[in-house]
Image (cartoon, rainbow, N blue to C red; front, top):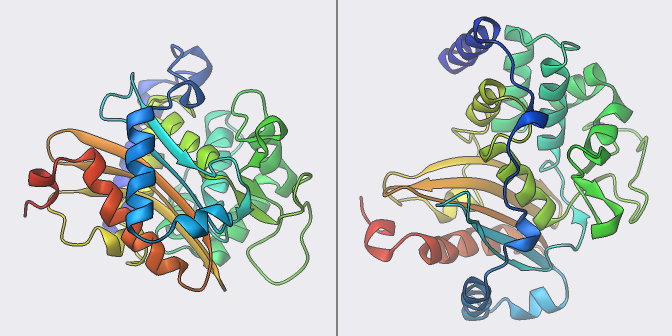
Length: 297
């Protein structure tokens, strides 16, 4: 309950501190213009070393790594970055974004009930709270926000992206994505864009961005990336994962000692996918964080 009180306290600061529109922020580098050949080669070598090249060739594994140690000069590597897959609960970050867009516009109040629901939706992946917030925002409103010119987190020109077309409950989809007929979908690169836009203050105003990021902290489910990074000293993980049958997804901002920061997103369709993601997180961490720091306790 203390976490929720701290989030509410930040929200109160928003009321007295005024609002700054994300539309007024300075332009940041575009991730699609920030691919780094050396990082790309290193990622491909690590994936080969893990025995997962075949999975990427079958498009059963998609991933994006973005070194944002200097957010003004991001370094991007991706394998199947624009391949859209079913992503289970990962697209709950789209509900989170939509809620904060509506809060910023005064259409939704960030009271304790809303804060608690959003936090449970992210940290514990509560389907009840995700469905509650989806209906409170408006089912079709979420996808409108994702497709808006402001965000373009679902963009047909790059094969889609984040999509929420079904409640996180029994029942039929209300709006499958127009390209792939997926109910809860994502691409690795568009998901990485979500985190980069959050980290650089381009989603909502700075104070709301801080609250959003706080909700992504302290993950309550210790698998996939969290499992793979267990024992790494001093790191902080801001994360949303997803699992359904053989579909496994994880996404995070990871902050490490020494000021190192990176975004990692991976999507898999295999019954071993959860293990893959844990191994990927452990291996790719060392591409951004020097080994001496990565192994420090």
